[in-house]
Amino acid sequence: MDDFTLRLVHLHHCRGIGWSAILKILKLDPELKSLYHYTRNNFNLQPSSFQTALADLQSDHIYKQIREYSSIGIRMITIFDDDYPVLLKETYQPPWVLYAKGDVSLLKKEKHLAVVGSRRFTEYGENAINYLFPKLIEKGIVIVSGLAAGIDTVAHHSAINHGGKTIGVIAGGFFHIYPQTNKRLASEMMKNHLIISEYPPDTKPERWQFPMRNRVISGISRGTLVVQAKSKSGSLITANFAVQEGREVFALPGNIFSIHSSGTNELIQQGAKLIQTPEDILEELIY
Image 1 (cartoon, rainbow, N blue to C red):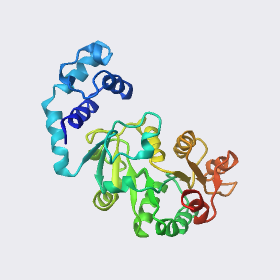
Image 2: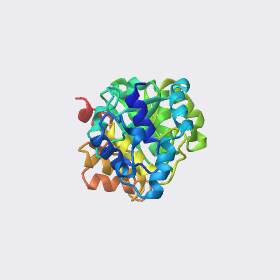
Image 3: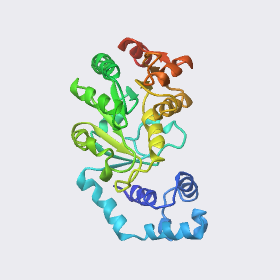
Image 4: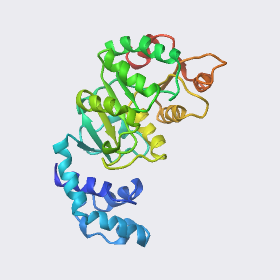
């Protein structure tokens, strides 16, 4: 890890330092050479927030922790690195740092499909995933999802079971995997697939981080498939991010009497592509 990366990651660990503050600092000091000599004017923060950030910058514990990440298999990929996903750079306020554990080469694959859906799913949704995935995986599609309960879990498992590759994007950090029921799945993915987060490893997941996580799921993917979703669900937030970034949005049609399909049917009404076969996706991503 070079000195600039170390300084940027250290800055990224500072409480109260958001995306815009880091942008301002990088404009004033592109190599962060003066990072450990900043005043409150550099941060443009309230006195109390500046004191918190300053304490983190002066923390030997944080500095030592960052230096030890590599020994436990955690990679730090900054937006300036070659391994950073090209498509994610094109999104609004892309993460300055991605923390990654697993097969980082998966980020360089050209064909990522985000797959999201309800935490409460039906047999129809699971069967649809297992019907669509074999052909998608055969064509080299990498499945991206959020390691959440429900459709996300089904998508990760199906990709693995069909011999494919999958990427999990989590809210919070690696030391606080949520939900706990997916710890075993997460462990397997950290060994043979990939998990990434825009939050330092010791960050506990907060409610607001989940919609932010969704922008990364769609941001690294050429298209987003919504399998089952209620109206106004988190999956629709992911689809909305995809639309804003000009990416493909696919939706699985469902029973008009089922709340599990109300969101996907609305997406189709709004212009998402109705999916009946793997070819419906492949013709947009590959052919």
